Image 1 (tube, rainbow, N blue to C red):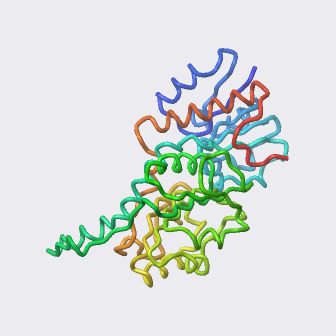
Image 2: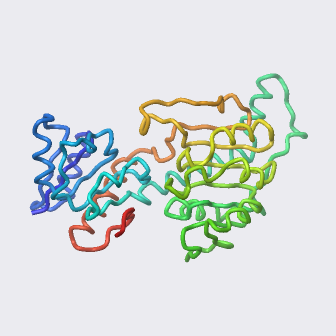
Image 3: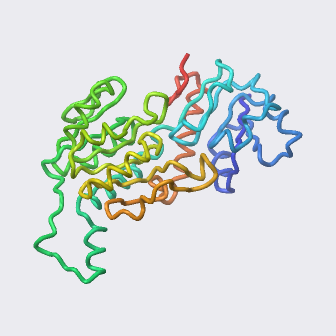
Length: 323
């Protein structure tokens, strides 16, 4: 019998879904329903964990034994919040990659268009009584070059949404290969060449040791002075100070930010070290690019389907620590 331990606080709807989804011979326990003194026993009897944020759920406690755990499925698409060094190397860990691609692609498109058409800039001028109809030029999408930095599920879904705009789409992934119908694909080795081309930069790449602080002052200065940067990945991919100063110095350079540097999920609070939201060339959202009705249930289904792949001895998707 497979024993799944759900380590995050679940809603009644999520519990109902889990009960219906898994076969009767699968045992499901909910960590948050047990007192602390009994949780160690639950870990000893489980072989699969379903988790949102292992750190906040107490999975880093020295009282927890991972002796019998074989597979951990994350509900989040990102995985920078999990410390793999704390886990035995035989445990497979999978991120929920691609689970939220469609709503996130829609959010990216909305942010990109908002910046390209300078919606907040001209609304603010109208608020001041300034109505610049014939002098208010905006950026066209047609004929532009759109660069997608990180060409996984979210990047691919975004590229498909952008197809009708007749833009040139280029991308970066880990292999430099793709079956998607785009102009060209690169690896990070060609980041400079990539950045020099783009009118619009969309960041969907995972945060890891290779992408932390990937975009700084030098990289921003390679881009066009009126380019648009959209970040729905992780704040730490961009150097915060460098981006703020670049936006100040280049008022026609726009940034749309959904993923911030200090957020409640990872740090317990939202805080800005620089007043990005006071800048007229910034569009912001509270890391809610995936949040549409049923998003959490859809994400849970995607995660559960991956757990079933593991149970049925198939290779799970999104493994982040292949050995």
